[in-house]
Length: 363
Image 1 (cartoon, rainbow, N blue to C red):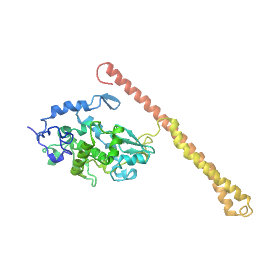
Image 2 (cartoon, helix red, strand yellow):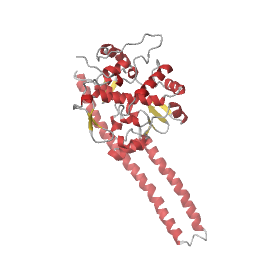
Image 3 (cartoon, rainbow, N blue to C red):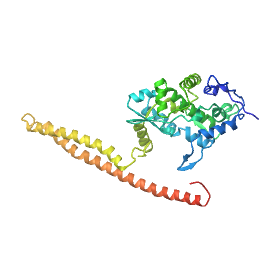
Image 4 (spheres, one colour):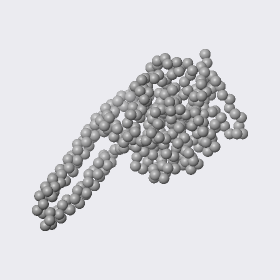
């Protein structure tokens, strides 16, 4: 039996990317009528491979792969604290990011999309298949007899943003909300022709998309958008990486944070010792001023000033020493933890390679 869809759920029409000289495409109300042709097209629009727990796999149209491309569960898990890392507003356009001296870095991990640090803003390029109308119809829009519409329970549930009540969410709806929020983020990033040219230069949008088509797409996205229909992560725009790391540090006590800053031990010492060295320089200035003050007739017999000088001298000796010891202790902990992880990982990977050589699985 064919399953019908509600056309109001489609974020854009199937004629958005049809040139005026081309005949208009015809829509079909039944799901599956274009599934075969859509699948054939999507195979050419998917990446060559993807990584699943460090295992290379061929992309497919199942939920596992699509959610690895579109899902933002890591950010949903800390949604209540995202206000610390960014404002609940659409992201600023690309020309603003350039004016703020931020380099635009393409990244394929969607949970790093719109995450920025001191000099860079990470952006996931728009996958070509997300601009495929048939892909939305066949794989992202839940059907009228879906449990999302009927209220029946399914294995996949999610808490609402405002209450602890659990609402039923099917796999298609999860993917739909993530994909729609992602496209809406680009509706905010690319507002002007200058933004469009920046996106083209940095390969953030498919090269076949024209400015006229983009304007038509955005007008339909904004006309049909609904706060309840896109993933709650996209209620926020840019998120600061340093604050995301702190949320993870204090929330789960993980030194690795949201995205590990320290790719080498040298970068670890540089990031942590530089503030200590700067503080020592400032302390040196204060100690020099105190020494000059103690040499004057007005302050050398001042009991309060002498006590303050004594206390600050002890502080200036002990505080850098304590901070330096803490940095070294954390380094030892990181080194031992990385060593243990490397040993365990080596055993697991070589076990998989042995299975691969035996013909049981892929490496």
